[in-house]
Image 1 (tube, helix red, strand yellow):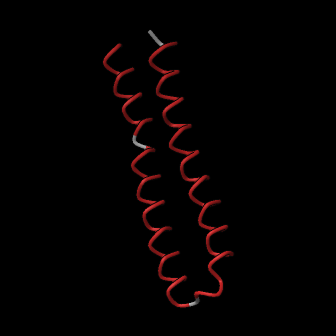
Image 2 (image 1 turned 120 degrees about the vertical axis):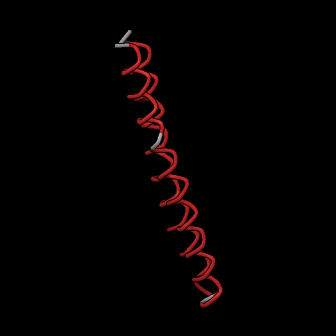
Length: 74
């Protein structure tokens, strides 16, 4: 049973991979948008930071779920 708990916690931590990919794609698109329209830099940065914060929050949720699985399902 403890092996399955470790596997479940490992899968929960994989949300960090999705968040990293999402933040990378968002950053590249924001850089392209700023290059095409430099006068909209402020608006683009606001949207980028909001999107990165939401993506990072999903990674943190996955980490918390993994910790809860390990700590409370022994």
